[in-house]
Length: 309
Image (tube, rainbow, N blue to C red):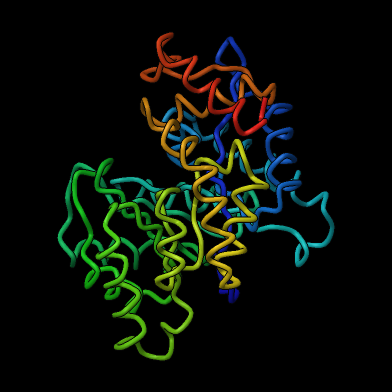
């Protein structure tokens, strides 16, 4: 496995659809180009923000290939941003299946949500990731998001997975608990063997990205980056360089947009915002529906304040 480190500003991009529900590949290319111009460090395709649960295998591969092709226009692979594919499932065999499809499509890494609904034990989680790593030679990011999975993965279990499955190189932490994130960082720093020295903790919550970096995190897999890649990337890079005061100014500038993005289930608000910005058409797949009328002026107001429309 290649020695890849995930860090910095990483948008979890939406999947644009046409009004008839088909993939809108021209809008996808436009969105990826917007992210690249904004200075992002990697791109996550087919995550929960990308409505991956509604994509069939052919669409899944098409989205990843389109993103890989677009970023490849930037030059040789070593100069382009990394493409990370969401490949998670609560069925280990399906997770392996998606991982293989992602690798064949050109992805550089995998984002695997911890199995939802089943609620596996720590032993089950370790074996789940071992089987994925055994089947597909790509670096893996664990995605811990209790609000969607129904169960929280403890810091001890995350560190255990990282120890026993060296292909797991990072965690996207969306528990909402800075204390939990600190525990992971501290466990790795104090007790982790040499092979864990490059294990990375990424924020899964935009609003916690700055405080997490101040505590030792290395970046964020972001929703708000869809709309404001330049501002968000600047904030993340300033923070990583230790310029917390300047990063804090951008954090508070972006905070209203970070918050409004979750006024309804993600990615409903961000798709409305991107449509207002002229990047995509506001089209979602059931069971998600368009933004409620009462919330549309709120998003428009925030976008105007940030001069995004």
